[in-house]
Length: 320
Ligand SMILES: Cc1cc2nc3c(=O)[nH]c(=O)nc-3n(C[C@H](O)[C@H](O)[C@H](O)COP(=O)(O)OP(=O)(O)OC[C@H]3O[C@@H](n4cnc5c(N)ncnc54)[C@H](O)[C@@H]3O)c2cc1C
Image (tube, rainbow, N blue to C red; front, side, top):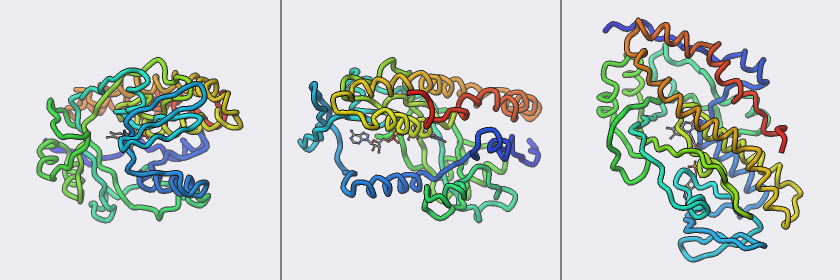
């Protein structure tokens, strides 16, 4: 099949800034981690303990206790389980369940911008200069292009959710796709495969002095690009609920946090699952059917209508 020149479906551009007061940003995850870790260590130098796997947790009226696999026990006023899609804390609170493999695998790679063909070196949403100027992100700007594509397969036998892949394997999965897609695959210095696992939203997060945050509370498919965003929103709202709260009032503060967040995060998880069909519509199979489909579902107006509720939210001011 002959393919026309690829063009962006839409650009978030300046209209997003006019409407929401901030651009649509993509941030390289290690830069974000570094910025957060630097800030935490500036407040308390020894706050972060790496290589400390958690085995479980218990609590009584006055304290929560984290049990590490090496036998250590750490006692505190509250415990926030933010240990991801296979959360031990969630399983301890609400019973052991496993996320389900969806039959989808995401290919991911980062390509230095200068290695791409000239016509593909466009910046769509990038780490913002303003955020850097305010000292919120300290790393140098990275000229990288993210490759992300999803492929259906029935099996996943790697021990974790992620495994390295090869250019040949990735090219085989995207055989027949547009030449720009093939070019991105060939330019990727490393390629990773991520098995996509799903969980349904749960109706409660908090018991006493222990609650959940991020994927531990609301693991999601990536089809709204909101999992990490909502984890950060959780953190902001939780910090507001805990501000100036006495130790005895912590269980009430955790319930206020859960109430402020659970409806929105559950809607986000369901929205991402529903987008699976939108992203993989059979109408995308040919150029003739794809053009009207993209106009109907993925041009600026339908995107604005569908996602306004996501972008209009402000974790700093929402009622808690
Ligand atoms: C392919 C793909 C694309 C995505 N794209 C986007 C996107 O564009 N935008 C977006 O916002 N989100 C995206 N996400 C979702 C995002 O990655 C997650 O929602 C986010 O990482 C959740 O953050 P978290 O801190 O809750 O969990 P995680 O990032 O999973 O962190 C959990 C941490 O807990 C640690 N841990 C786990 N178990 C234990 C234990 N027993 N003891 C001690 N530590 C433990 C882990 O090592 C890890 O460091 C994507 C996800 C995938 C798979």
